[in-house]
Amino acid sequence: MAPPPRRTVQLEAKILGARGLVSLKGAEEPVTSSASLTLLGAEPVTSEEVAESSEPTYECSKIALVKADDATCASILATPLAVSILEGGESLGSATLSLEPLMQSAGIGETWLPLVGAEGAAAGEVCVTVIAALPLMSEEDWEESSIMTLTIESLHKLPEKWGLSEQASEA
Image (cartoon, rainbow, N blue to C red; front, side):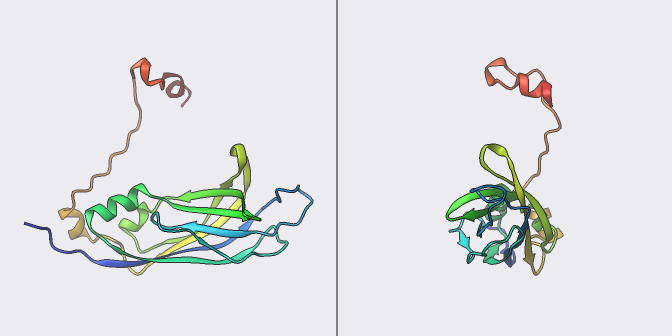
């Protein structure tokens, strides 16, 4: 027997702005940038360029209608919102935001994410928000769902061939 249909929720992801941007041409050069976001693996959406600002405001958003079935919810849990700030088509920095809070809350408020540039260098920050009219799953939906959240707190005595023993001891 098929599970009953769940709700469909409209999600809107927005890039509101950035701060602390540094031009690829050098720290003293003005930054002309645009923003790009990818929601749930769909085609990226790119904003218009904002001229000569290290703290630009963008008009970049993507709307998606999401059916809250188990497969879609698993995809939402596995696919973060991807954000990039571009200068002349080249990436100044990128960031990701987990969409997991949308499962039980209506949206993610304005959040500043650190941008990671080339070779892992800090590249400023980007402000994003995700708006939803209601949570993707109600309490009843959770009870009927086959989704399980598993958090690994630590791993011990891993096989050497996994090559994780050095990293595990550092953490």
